Image 1 (cartoon, rainbow, N blue to C red):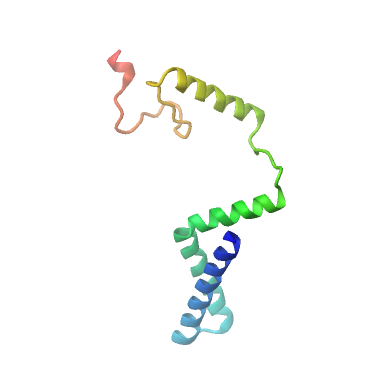
Image 2: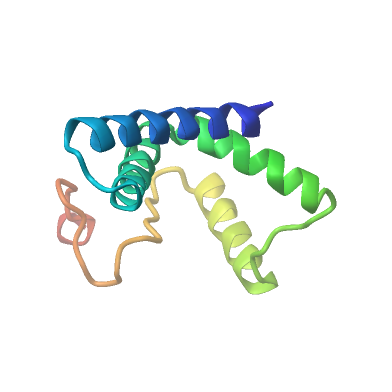
Length: 114
């Protein structure tokens, strides 16, 4: 049902943009379709994230119901090690998205305070 709802939202967005562009701005049908497709994509990408995630889950479950994670064994081991470190030491902060050597914004420097 989530996939149907998301597809319906995208279709209605496309149709609305197409009609406005075709009739109000008097573009050719092909140009209006291309512009409407781009506008519908942008709007749905920004505002329909929840519906898109639900539709993706339905498609993934339909085509690969027994699929496992796509992460490698090394990545899973690393994640388990980080989780164990955080559980054992709640005062330690880990930011895997930050490049090493760059300071955290707004954080106190723990090395200087020691």
